Image (cartoon, rainbow, N blue to C red; front, side, top):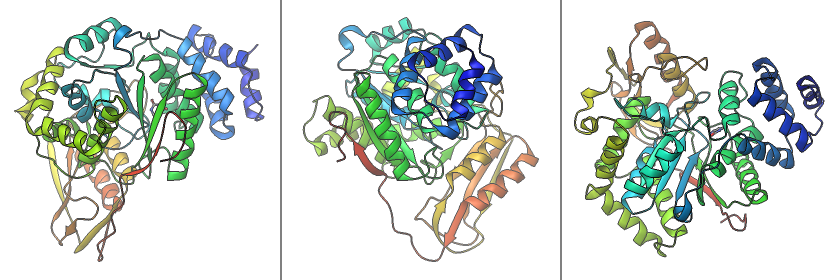
Length: 442
Ligand code: URA
């Protein structure tokens, strides 16, 4: 077998056998497949797709490329949540201390920014000293000790996904359903949790642009889970505008802390955090009643217990917990530019992709897989969709270290904001839930 033949086969839109997929992944792992060959294969998959069986085989081959975590007697109660990627998506950071404060063990392996989307690991690394490079042993030990741990996808776990992920990021091959499905599901299965909640995003800031595509991706992931004997719940959520008000690494940590302090009670971040946490508590049988579960979770935030858990998490992973009360301890940007509305009206939409693009330009994301990122830069949305604005009100604020980049970012953000006379109707954040057990829509 030769890699070039596999590229040719996929270019001709033919189906790979499981042996061919196994060979491809093994060649990626032992270095005989070159980056340019893998990139060509990824592009062929981008255009011609993979069948469900090929996707399941790819998922299994990626799982086999590394270790699978065994949480022993914690396995049944552990919750893992994963997002398919969005803009300003800090819900993992708000959710995991909340669930841990509710007594639910959470073990989370997260990724870095991908394409235009941000990554939880990059965001957490903006906390001075925070160590995301946990070994599997350390991850398990920390969950046993404080109920929560979060680490970067380790080289031991689905290392093949690590290589593909980095190449996809720089070859414009991220937004492919089978590649996303195999990447997400392989990581989740290898991470060893029994209760898996997937946040499948659609909209301008997501890899899936329409709710229908997000349903397709969700069903693919739930089905692959079934083929590989794992139960997955997919929650389809909107990513038409950035999630929350902050986009950029340290800005998003600050917004998460504000939520955990009880200062953000409504809006999309609160809605999704409480919804995912409620789903987890119901799924684990800790609560039968949705309202009771939600009220209990709100109480954990109001009483400071969720924030306390986050502090414990930061401390356990070597970070400076003082950032919670002193945001000046983050890297600070040189410039803060407030941009005003040019007219009266209501915000109808904020194109998440354009805001993400502006953020990446400022340095919050990568162009090449080895690029460093600037934790301090980003964009704060002073106004969100549905809010009234008057001419001269601040629409958004750019945090930057470069005046030229600031100007270009401002151009993209101005394009992203649509302000009209009439108040827009509001849409639900959650479009649909596709259940684990029966793959039926609810
Ligand atoms: N998140 C992942 O883990 N992988 C993808 O391919 C996309 C989002």
